[in-house]
Length: 270
Ligand SMILES: NC(=O)c1ccc[n+]([C@@H]2O[C@H](COP(=O)([O-])OP(=O)(O)OC[C@H]3O[C@@H](n4cnc5c(N)ncnc54)[C@H](O)[C@@H]3O)[C@@H](O)[C@H]2O)c1
Image (cartoon, rainbow, N blue to C red):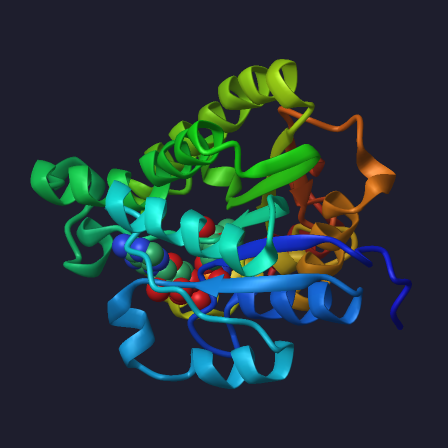
C-alpha cells in the first residue's frame, strides 16, 4: 500500500545490483511513494545489465559512479542536479565490499591493501558522497541521507571480518557529518542497522546460513527482510522523521537488545 509519503521528493539510490539487493527494494518503494529517483552503481555492476530493468520500472536514469572516485561522484551529482533541475531530498548509500572476505582471509590475517580497498568502498565513500554534495550544495534543506550498516560495528561476529571495522567507521561518519550538515542545512544523516538479509553481499559472509538462522531465533520479531527495510527507509526519507539525525537505527526485529530467547535455550538443551 502506498501513502504518497515521498510525493515531490527527489533522490539518488546507490547500490542496487539485482532483485535481492536492499537498494533495489528501496528504489521500488520510493517510486511507489511518489519520489523521482536516479539510480547509480559501479561501471562493473552496470555491465551485469540487471539495473536497466529497475530503471525502466521506476522511470529513472542510471548514472554510473565508482564510489572510490571523486570525479565519478562529482559527475553523478552534476548530472543528477541537471536531471532534476535542482537539488535532491534524499540519498541512500547501500554499498559494502571486503576484499579480505572475498579472498577468504580471516580477520587476524588480513592483507592491508585489501583492507584499504574495502574501507574506501564501504565507508570512506560515504564521506566522499557527503563532502561532494556539500561542496555542490546538492542536498535540499531538511534532506535525509541514509547508509546501511550491520550490528558487527558494536558486537563481535568473527566471520564478518574487516567489514566490522568498515561499518564502525561508516557509523562514525554518519554522526560527524550529521553534525556538520545539520548545522549548515538541516540535512539529517543516519545509519540503518539491518538484520542479516539474503543478498549478493550478505551471502558472501562465511557461514551465512548459520548466521541468518541464529539471528532469526534470537529476534523476538524474527529477521527483518529487505522489503521491510525499504519501508523503514521510506519513513526516514519522509517529512515525518525530520528531527532524527546522527543515529544508528536498529532495524532487526529486536535482535540488538535480546540477551537470549526461549528458542535458543531449547536448542542448547538438546
Ligand atoms: N545483506 C545483509 O545481510 C546486510 C545486513 C546489514 C547491512 N547490509 C548492508 O546493506 C548494503 C547493501 O548490501 P546488500 O546486502 O543489498 O548487497 P548487494 O551486493 O546487493 O549490494 C552491494 C552493492 O555495493 C555495490 N558496490 C560495490 N563496490 C562498489 C563501488 N566501487 N562503487 C559503487 N558501488 C559499489 C555493488 O555493486 C552492489 O550493488 C551494504 O552496505 C551492506 O553491508 C547488508
